[in-house]
Every structure is written in C-alpha cells, then in structure tokens.
Amino acid sequence: MSEYVIRADKPVLAYKRSDPLFLISVLLLWGLGIFTILICTQGVGERFFHNRYYFLWRQLAYSAVGAAGLVFFAAVPVNALRRFSFSFAVTSVVLCVFALLPVIGSAKNGAPRWVSIPHVITFQPSELVKLTMVLYLSHLFDKHSSEYEENNKEFMYPAIGLAVLAGAIFIQKDLSTSVMVFCIGVAMFIVSGTPIKVFVPILSLIIPVTILMTLTHRYRLLRILSYLKPNDYTSTSGYQALASVKAISSGGIWGVGTGSGLENISGIPEVQTDYIFAGWATAMGLAGVFGYLLLLGIFLCRGIRIALNCPNKFAALGAFGCVFTITSQSLINLAVVCGAAPTTGIPLPFFSSGGSSLIVTLCMCGFVINASHCGADNDFENKKNKEIEFNESFGETVVEL
View (cartoon, rainbow, N blue to C red):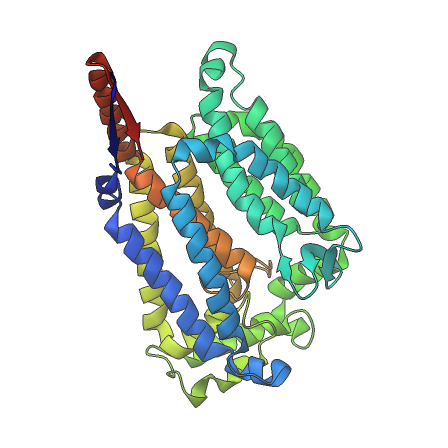
C-alpha cells in the first residue's frame, strides 16, 4: 500500500539569493519618484484639478498596481513567463491597434496612443510593447539559437517580431518611441551574438525613413528646429525646453529646497510627465542630479551583473533587455530635459506621472529580480526531482504543495 507524504516545501532560499543592491536601487528610485511628484505637482494639481495632491494620489494608486506586477513577475517561474511571451506580444500589438479605433482609442494632440474606457482605465499600449518585446525577443533568441549556428539565420525570426512590435507603435504616430524600441531590439541582437554587419542594410533603410518621417510632419520638424535654434522659438515649440533649462539652472549646486522656490516649475508645460526631472533638479540642485545618476548607475551595474550570472538564457537576455530599456529611457529623458536632445515625449521611469509607464517599469524590475534567483529555482527543482525519484523507488507517492 502506497504511503502519501504531503509537504509544503517551497524554495524560500531562492528569494534570499536575489540581488539586494538591485532591489534597494529599485525601491529608492521608486520612492524618489513619488517624492518628486509630491513636491513638483502641487501647483499644477491645484490649478487644473483643484486638488494639490491629485497627481500624488494617482501615482500611489498606480504604485499599488505596479507593486502587484513586480511581485508577479518576480515570483512566477521564468519558464512559465516564457510560455506566455508570444501571447503577451500579440496582446500588446492588438492594444496598439485598438488605440486607433474611434470608440476605444483616445487621442491627445492628434496622436492616438491610448486605449480608454471612460471612468475606468486609460492605458498606453506602447509602454506594454517595451516589456513584451524584451520577453518575446529573448524567447526567440533562445529558441532558435541552434538554427542560427546551423543555417546562419541569426536574425530572421526575431527581426520579424521586432519589426511588427516597433511598427505597432509607429502607426500610433509615435516615432520617437518606435525608434527607441527598435534600438533596444538591436542592442539585444548584439548581446545575443548577432554580428553588427547584419544591421548595415537595415539601418541604411531605417535612417532615411526616419529622416523623411521627421521632415514631412510639421510638429516633428519644429522640435528639431527649436532644438537647433531655441532662441527663435521661445514662445512656441521651444518654450517648454527653455523653461526646463531655466528651472534647472536656478537650482544651483544644492537646490532651492522643497518650499516656495519650486513655484516657477509650474509654468513648464507637462511638468508632471516628461519634464518632471526639471523639478527634481531645481529642488535638489546639481548634487541631487549626481545622486540620481549614481543610483541609476547602481541599478544598471547590478542589473547587468544579474544578466551575466543568470544560467537561464531566456532570463538572462530578458534581464538585460529590461535593465537596458529602463536605463536608456532614463538617459534620453534627462538629455531632453537638460536641452541636450530634441523633445521626444519619452517619460522618465519611476518619476513621470502616469500609470502605464510606472506599472510596466515595475514589472520589468520584477522580471530582473526573478532572473537573479532563477539559478536557485533550478537547484530547487533538481533537488525536488531527485527526492521524487528516490521516494518512488521505495514505493512512496509524494504530493508537493
């Protein structure tokens, strides 16, 4: 007669092997983002919504959802997430198409980039594409790696996937985000072992098309002109960038603090979203900027370390893609806010007000945390399988909970 042994043995030790410095950097960036929303958006909230803490309460609500996403992507085994990578990618493309529909889609400044259910939810599918692109490309790079070596088809399957995902963003009239997603995909191609020379014919096509799309749309052309000659567009397309640079300069070395000295940043259009870092730099000065860059550097270094040490190729590539996406997006936003790059409309991860960006950013961080302990998960699975084989050899049936 078989003996049934019921256990509640869970891989708790796996989570103890997660990178603590990476987790701390995520929590600090997250906390600083909420603090910046608190000190920089009170004037805007009072002016437009008659509630000084309107954006703070919204960000806290989004943070709760993002925290759930972080836990989900950190706890679910990476192989299970991999099985759904294609479904995630298809869903994100479908949502991008929905944003173009007159009933479900919602446009701002002529750009149909949101899926909206009135009084329920408004979501930006292009943010989701960043996560699904990383997971799906990681899956394809791992799945077809043997075929690459045998048939020299290093990039056919992932290239098609990247083209579809970047194209789904492009049709929303979001050129900057689609180009950024494409560049992130190229970086993943390179770290997966694809020779750089493969991209020469692709870039010879992409670069002229990007220039053409910029020159044939007035608002994109004005962004370039206002960047090159900001003094000629002080009251029009260059006003936002000039106001941001002026606010940052007023912060000096140590900043103006969190009091009345921040009143001038309320005059920056969309200060709560793309230009939120101008508020942080004004309040904390050059010291605060260096502190942020140091924290972002720790986030990048520990994330890359996790990717390099991860024994699972899918998780390693996914961790690299997530960390590279968040870091590159942060640096692009900082360049725009400081006047070193034309306006792009790319938000600052952890800081910019908006649920889509914050939730997806935290989900990416959850996946990196998952990758940091997936080696321990594998050890646990091997140990569990050996125990089952041992017990079965003695006629026992083991039920694992």
